[in-house]
Image (cartoon, rainbow, N blue to C red):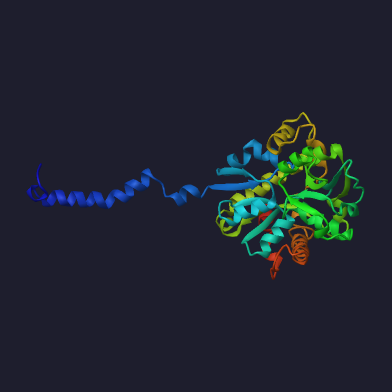
Length: 345
């Protein structure tokens, strides 16, 4: 074997060719392996939950990916608190969350923006007591066990309902459970009541009694909603995607409002598949929500001011109950009607 010292030296011309190839190597590598930043700029991770809303049919259709050209990674979470934590980690760019977890996130300084009201919860979330639990009113929950996903709109509403009935959180055993866990606990008889949404709500009502609904609480001044939030920095770089997304959701909601879907429709089957509901349950579940139209989204009732007021009031209530440590100076900073306005032009 030749030693290093015995190898012939490269000729000047050869050395020049090798140097040129070395200089061009990054260019060739760039052609073969695209810049990761460029490859990722048309992709988004979207966190969703199991609420029964028309948006699920849009998700299933593949229209978002087809129209925008983006690769969408859909990730399902058990509650808004989980969605917010995923967004805080940087692994999720867009997420579905209720007004309570959004208010908590804003209070903690997470740099997100609410850009679409997915639904007004109305009567879609309800407090249900198990038949045979001897619970006939909210006040009867003293000493009982209630399950709810923490930092969700249902959690916020449960606390509000207890306070209205003269009960503190110490008067009730409140368990933090995700919807599937609540369904299982209910079947086992481990809990006396739950404040929850469909599809679990439809199931517990079969052997339970409704004590109060989100709509009842809203009429007392504590309105709740589910919304879409986006990472502010990502939104600034992907404006066209968000405007198109808003247009597609508005069109799907409008189609549903014009002609509510029957249980045997393809849309209902798609909603059922994603949420875990049965097709027979979906029409009634959809009817329990209200879905603001595009023009209503931008109005003072919602993104034009109402949503910011609701977040402010929710955060104040959560702070009074010890659920958040401090309030944000301005909750309007976390709400934008920009994408809705552009979609309406």
